Length: 508
Image 1: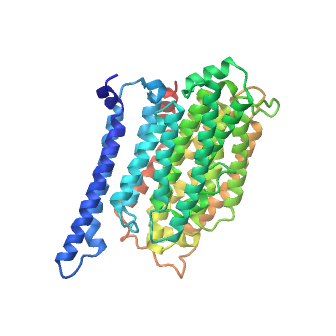
Image 2: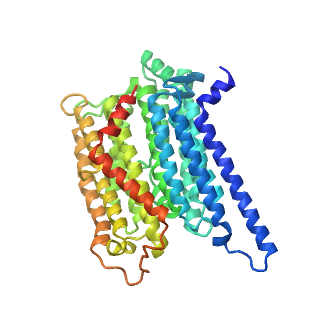
Image 3: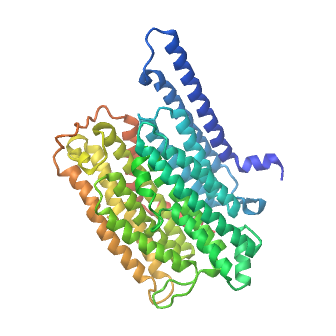
């Protein structure tokens, strides 16, 4: 294969990398121009007047690069494979590259409104480099390339979490995320090395053939367990979730939104490929009446712990970002249900739920960003009286909260419906009924703490100590982004088949 053909197949990733470099250059030039203007004039320009134009150009360049990359994905061939699965193009990978790019676009829109970021060019470039990591994750079926994508994504997210130098909590969030992330990378790499040593390959299809031809050995089982532990860190599944609350609360809000959305979607795509394609022959069984060793019982235990711990600990939270973090732990448990069920229906249900959940979280963090910028905090009390001061934002937040709780006719309801129905249909005698029942219990519990947020928004009077939220001063782009995301959640709730059928049709 020629380099020209390779460039053609990797053109979307190349566009995103070039966009990141262009944004870096724009940010550097705008800062140098501001410094020169400050030296040559008697009155140095303030940050707001000196770098606002540069931030606008950086945001425009990043958003334009993402849009061009989406167009490039649409022009890719339907099927292609390079270097033994290192780069794979299928309808499924193309669809989720587009979804990851859309999430990056909305994150760029939120980052434009984040006033505390002193270097917007560098920040937006890191978002784009993280997006390249997402695209490599989604578009590979080879363990080494998957690990490279994980590391590119992880290193970018560590920097994004610690980017706000004016807030000590941001540095703490970045440090904790880095320590837990490096630990998870060590588990993943050690697991991959054991699997390679026993199978002689890092391609998922070749690993599947080797596992099907020979009985499972202890080292293979150890490698599978360590790989799953590494990904459990990435998706914040209990008991490997301890980094999430501090990272969600301390990181800049666009960083938290991207960690909660884009990284989760890509992680579930690649985790589904690994367990259903690579480890398929050692599936095992999680049925209550016929337990069998394999990766399925491990994921079932992770799902059960995530649902219980995430929902019960979220009940005690007074900070909305920490509440969303523990909610994310619970939602990781729900999403694992589809992988435990297995098959095309289970995997498609997992991907549908991960997608609508990611869109919901970006929107919810957008509302949190507006409230934080106007009131100076993101505790539940800071949302008091939001409905009277900003009815549109309050309505959007209600849509996001009800979707997370699984209330019809929103997208979250149909996501849970697809997951639960796929789990109930698998096998005979409703073997996963215990896990579905636990998930239903968790959904009922979650409704309580989502309603606490909505009670503050719609019923409680504005807090006397908090500044009144001025609906005029908030960034218009931020409000448009939140409104579009709320409309998307409502649209996919009314017509879920538009997305669900596309995901199912893209399945191999």
